[in-house]
Image (cartoon, rainbow, N blue to C red; front, side, top):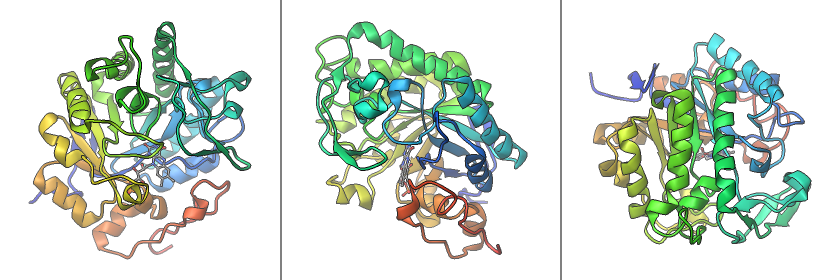
Length: 361
Ligand SMILES: Cc1cc2nc3c(=O)[nH]c(=O)nc-3n(C[C@H](O)[C@H](O)[C@H](O)COP(=O)(O)O)c2cc1C
């Protein structure tokens, strides 16, 4: 039998029944205090037939927020809220990892404790605007973290990793993609530090590798993954030599035997935002022999092709899975897909969240 997205996969410590995974998707529907709720549990439960669900970006720190109504994972209330989600997914036979997040400079004083400036590797203001919940505001110039503060950031990831364990996730994905804090350290467009966390890639990748180590200490490597978006320009990101930057960090990670590296490729949407054809999982495969989850504009056909060509072991689906809670079954039957409604991606309530019909519903 030929290998395809319906084949099971041993992914570190978990065996996923298929290779059709839910990509992490911010949906801005947590309750006050950044606490997940029953509605979120319903949303994830509906998608439990995915081989693995990677739950939305979730802040490990009060300074890690940059959007309204996104979840956290550092208080007892966050743990209790996420427990509703993990219980619902497990009862439905699913597996769920949590994406650990710190936004760094992609924030605004209104989301920060005491109205402080957001923190970042360097004081470089992102071009663009932030959605505050009521309107759009320009990003502000972040405050460059002092080297003495970095152990505190790593401790926040350790605390978040422990809280995710208490919430009974099956594992965690470290969010090193899409222009947030770890990506800001890794790429030279946002990191102009002159200390041991800036300069050559050996230094720019230091925080990533230290965070990986601390999270692995909590979970074991076989329940930890990491996400990269090497060709992405979202959040005003760039790097002068992405193949070297991301190739280096993947080579450093390989001996740790993480559960996976999750790598996005440049999509039509990225191209519309000014990306040029960039590198992705195909180009990085020679630098990493561990399991690769590929993401970005895949269909059943192109996902199967990536598996056959050997540069993906599984595929994460974002927008298609958002609109089709029973994606694996639809793919299996070659059934038509529901269209996603972008106007409800970040809107409150059940509309465009838990009301996409399954087949036959
Ligand atoms: C509404 C929405 C929310 C997203 N939230 C996240 C997120 O929380 N973390 C993340 O790493 N990527 C996030 N992404 C990116 C997706 O995970 C994925 O990379 C992107 O949708 C491309 O994959 P697709 O073509 O299968 O949709 C988000 C994308 C969308 C459309």
